[in-house]
Image: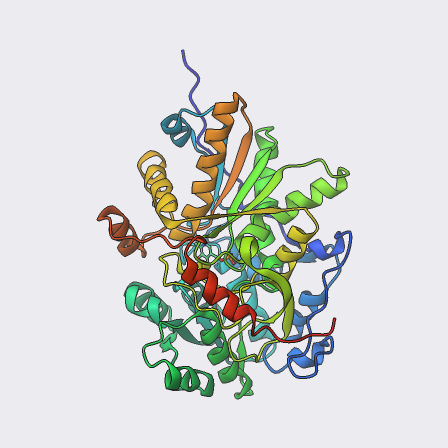
Length: 461
Ligand SMILES: *Cc1c(COP(=O)(O)O)cnc(C)c1O
């Protein structure tokens, strides 16, 4: 009799990791420090207190290897964590591949993505510090939904600026944010100086994460009872996401499997860093032997593969500290591609640094390939992936096909960062053939990146 295949590896709630992993403790060289936007000098904790609570500022600069997850945060995590690890038997069969493919699925969370992993602790530490309201930006709406849910857990108000293109194209996220008790504005808005400045020049601006961040930061900085929360990019965000990789390590150990390749999508780098950092810890401890780690970004916003590694602002208005990162220029406005969560001009300084150190590699994929992989995955595994996550799947399919051709049978682990139930308009565009691909061969894209890069801040470091 054929053996019954095991599809998922689950952990009990009691097996959920109780510490986050801080990769800053183990890096061979530290990443360059963030710089003050006005003085150009390295920033200190005091520079961040107008918008962040001290607990998060200390996590941002901590070099402790492990940080305990507060009980109150663990309690909320257990609503959906530990998340399942699946073996993609049916996708493997559909591909006819010799590779073994696993995916760690974060779509089981309240928002349908990995983002509540950091929204919950951020809301918790702000509430603990006596803050009454959090402001934020959101691209596809995933982060706004996550933060609205998290604020509801700790009695905080939540005010969200959503990138105009997504606000118009994805109305269900707005309804979810409001259902969780948040308020929401399209960005650019006329509620802030930063928004009004963009509208004065481009009344029809589709917005960008960079603009929306400026608006949310400005609103928080001007209100002593409000703080700002960022859903990706920063060290403390990636720290909170490491629960994904810690769980995956436990799950793989349960089935005695070790991984050769890890593939994930990168917008600001948080789900990818969260999955991979604990694996990189093991690699560093083993003297460098470990899986290949591959970031996948959209060809229309190719931060890691075509950007420069330089100091830049996190937002359009230049209100945030300057961070050394792979960037396309802080005022680069990417095409309104369907994977809204990947439309950011910059990349996490930690991920950027790890790419520079050769501990990770990056590829870019066009959205046609991505949705083709997403549809194949939906039809074989039964989960409709978030458009962002289809980037990881497209690169996973490429790697599996290459392995089959080479007659190899590697173990591939991919990050399924969320489901696409609120992104069905994007699938509709793909299925009806109205999706356009913008790749680096597109001279308009190269020109607008060159323009934005010519306006990088001048930094003497
Ligand atoms: C926001 C989002 C991303 C991109 O953000 P990262 O910080 O790079 O993880 C990827 N997938 C989903 C489902 C998202 O919501």
